[in-house]
Image (cartoon, rainbow, N blue to C red; front, side, top):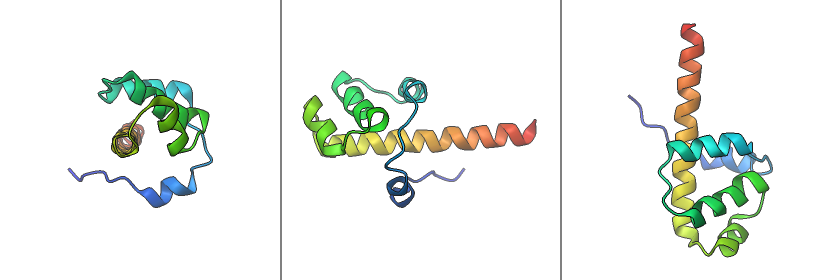
Length: 91
């Protein structure tokens, strides 16, 4: 099985797009998220549209940890999209 990698270029192109709140909540169920601060920072960034820096500042989260968790969240989303694609092709 090939490893899914985070594509920062495609993400930067879509930085103005906001993630659906329901999709974000479902991804949080799949991704292990122990810190409510981190979840709130990611929600501020992905759903609300704050910058990374502002989301981290508002929630008292280190930017480096935020970036790692964001990468994990997007990798999980890529895997879910691959599963969806395979499932619809087999139907």
